[in-house]
Image (cartoon, rainbow over all chains, first blue to last red):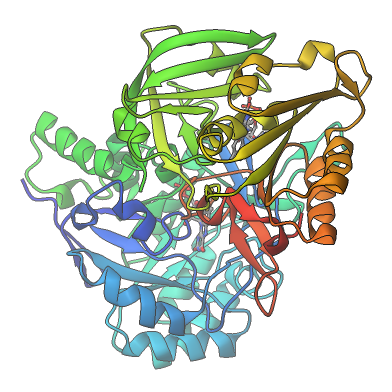
Length: 303
Length: 260
Ligand SMILES: Cc1cc2nc3c(=O)[nH]c(=O)nc-3n(C[C@H](O)[C@H](O)[C@H](O)COP(=O)(O)OP(=O)(O)OC[C@H]3O[C@@H](n4cnc5c(N)ncnc54)[C@H](O)[C@@H]3O)c2cc1C
Ligand SMILES: Cc1cc2nc3c(=O)[nH]c(=O)nc-3n(C[C@H](O)[C@H](O)[C@H](O)COP(=O)(O)O)c2cc1C
Ligand code: FES
């Protein structure tokens, strides 16, 4: 049985990665699971310089999942390269860095550094709903995505470049095409959906940031639809995510067109969700006599 | 280092209306647990509600491999948990938190708790009581909410119980009795857990009087282990304020290091 996939040049032992921002730099989950079993680890959103993040409360629960407004708290790329990357490299899994910035210049400076590091790929975050500048400002239009991606592409010459997109748009195929036309090697999504929860006693939003990104099983249907549309629209591989809790959910994304998948908030419910997803994919393959997982990618038959 | 285990619920007690004490068999957690640490408990088998619930450790029996926690039914999650019966398997991650209570050889200590915030202080009092002179101050809103009086009496040299309305024992806020006692003799350390207004007042008092003080804090959690950065709290001990995390850096902090 073959579970290896090639995500735009990143050869992974299986299609299961952990989603950015839900797995830190891996250390915390090392206590609970064998990181060597993962296809890949996507790091938390990392910027050129340290970012303090948003005020608490940063998290609240909603039907089908949760809202978060972390605000990309991270120690900056230099700290990551010095302290976390050497540790992560001890494991037999692919390391993809989620890159974020507030201006095009910042994305470019950051990716110049990432180009020199011992990493397997970059996921360009053009889709965080929780920061005032950058990200979403570029991520919602064909032109915006094309502009940032092509600037980044010029300096990120040695690593696969995946552009992570937001579902908070009218038509997700537009930014996906922008990424492809600018030379991206792949696209990923979905990032979180913008949401809000109000405390009816206090008559105020629960999150200090008022709004936050919705993730969890409640967004899976949106994710599957978006991945299907992106896969139809572009000729580069798609990394699919949004509400994956087990192998069946992962298969659904792959049928829709995802070459690989990411587990996000599912890690919080059970630190073993990623491992169980890998097992679930294998069980599905056995049950349906599938020798090579690649043979199912994008094979959904539309009605 | 925490573990994730399915633990058998071996004893279920109703402490007061809507407040339950669970005893679970969890040797892997009991052997490592320290006073002040907490658990992340899976409350749903269907996936709704979604997240685990953080609950503090009330008591640890290392020899028997038992862990006890007490919780109040607040919403959907704790309601589901309260429906579990003896014999059930509960999915628990723990012990969590790197900041636990400082159990040094103090001569005299004061422990102050308010409402359900008293529970995390029991294991602490138990361990300190072996070597220190322990006074416990417990504040409740009224008589009906007073819980665990006997349990705390056993693990302290002196127990002061207050109710806001005077319907049981002393009338007033627990902190006022602590302040009064400090005029005679200051403790070497104050430990506090409870509602934010109480924690604020205790912190302020301890800083004014220059008494070392530890507080146990709460914040909404995603992962419970330091990965999601959800449970932020402002740390003011360094040159510049920064956000630390309750689940990883706490839940127990030195009062002077945090903004409450
Ligand atoms: C470190 C820590 C230790 C705790 N120890 C205890 C304890 O020993 N006994 C006890 O009764 N309670 C304790 N709590 C509070 C307890 O976690 C909440 O009462 C519980 O999560 C409420 O869940 P619910 O589904 O019943 O309520 P809901 O209000 O429906 O919960 C909705 C969401 O908000 C979160 N939430 C609600 N209240 C709190 C809170 N005060 N702190 C953090 N998250 C909250 C829930 O976890 C859930 O994700 C502790 C909280 C923390 C952070
Ligand atoms: C707490 C939290 C933090 C996140 N941080 C990031 C981030 O830094 N960068 C990013 O591209 N996506 C981030 N995301 C989005 C996830 O990577 C993922 O796209 C989204 O949560 C959908 O997947 P899920 O439903 O499986 O969680 C974050 C999500 C959560 C829940
Ligand atoms: S709950 Fe995730 S970092 Fe504290």
